[in-house]
Image (cartoon, rainbow, N blue to C red; front, side, top):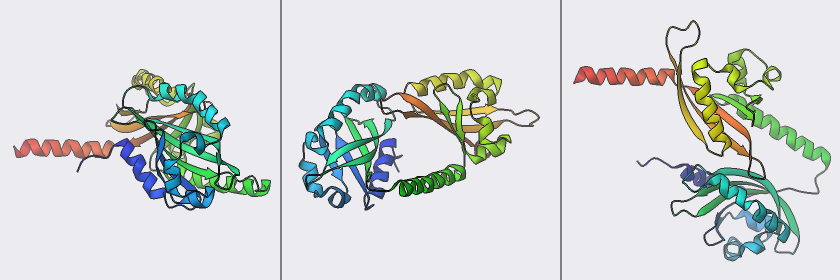
Length: 277
């Protein structure tokens, strides 16, 4: 089987979420400036049939003010994506969109912007209406529920997860990370990511961090021997940029997984093959 690409993964997520009744999923082609796909939920939320959205010029998809704001930020986003085939960038923001009955609604939009093989840009996104009729109590409750869910998902991920600011100072870490280091989130906040790195890894990760600040998603494999350990430890990780609404990297997510056992199994297989030959 051919390996799935990063863009393929995002399209797969689009298809998985396309039937959610309160979320509109879509693909937008910057070559034709038209929507390529939109989920049926657009009918319930904005009153348009999907086929109508596919024929609609971009100026009618959003209000003039939102259109102008997007056009102002477009140079920053293009610069972040770059000219080559990168992992793309993620953007989160709010825009105002017209409905078929003449009213307008505000939607929260999460977008993945990337350059396709034909060198044109494509955006894959999910839109969710932000209701102005909800009471403050309901909004606070939903935010609390969402935060609890996200915290649970964050803590149960089978790897170390941390979030640092543009200076490399910790903002947040998951439970697996804090348990491993024997500290609380309140204690790690403000400390620099370099503080926990082995000396031989600091310069390597300084370069990786700087690449990430330029908008690149960077993978790495580390080998080091902890103090009092009898063997080397191996880890695989990823530095992932988080962009502000202006297209600037303001945070970096770092995920690290211990692959020592997998690496040892690989070495055993290599040795077994040598013996077999």
